[in-house]
Image (cartoon, rainbow, N blue to C red; front, side, top):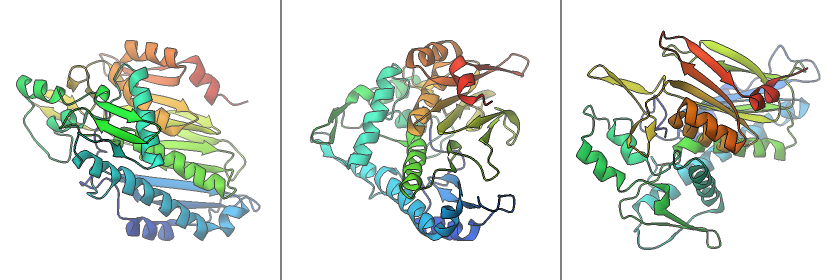
Length: 353
């Protein structure tokens, strides 16, 4: 399970005022666009990471200000509902609430709880929004720590971790905690969720051609300004950023990647990463370096990328086949090189005539 985004400064999402300011500063018409297909670009900070949106077409240029406002509104809503760094968010109030009574959520947050638990059940608990205490124990949460947790501490923490400790009531949109110290964190699926909501906002304004990216999770629809399919670069899973390992073309598809190559630390010569296996309470140990998932829904791709990454190359591959997912596995060889393993669904979704 993923912890907070690498580089987070302790805020799950940047203040909306900063987002708006950056949107105004970076919105522009690209000189490479065809005369009848101008494109407008927005970028900024959100959820402890960055976002980037490119929209294409004359309506995008005409409605740039309205689109800027719509983007800001979506990001603010996600922040106010699902941030663990805002004391007044729905999720924070739920985490503080008594475990003895059900907590009523907005339709949006409850829907994401339902999605998260569906992926948890389908993956055998490998995706788990209650795993935060274990992530924190290894030093990847808001409270930094150097020492690794003892076996006794892990055993205690594991008593309050597990998606089975959440009881959902769809009729009342309530969630009840079945342990007094249960803590939920939606960061492993919220970036993908934000991408989906942004896509809905653009489609609602008649935008058919766009590329959305939030913290590395993306969705592409339609065509670029030059009429070509959107081309997406998949990063090589190394500590040095910006190394491209594969380029694909997408249309009406979301993409999410999870890996162990950025958010890690060295302890007594051991490489400790942030992807915690809820079954053992320890960082997953295997040769899988990254997993890329394609799906129509970015939240689903986001959650499954984490689950498959925790599972490892063999178990993860079987899970992907069972769930009918389009995936690319990048496996680390003993000599430090990488073996790319796309399944047929991935190749079919990214092959263009």
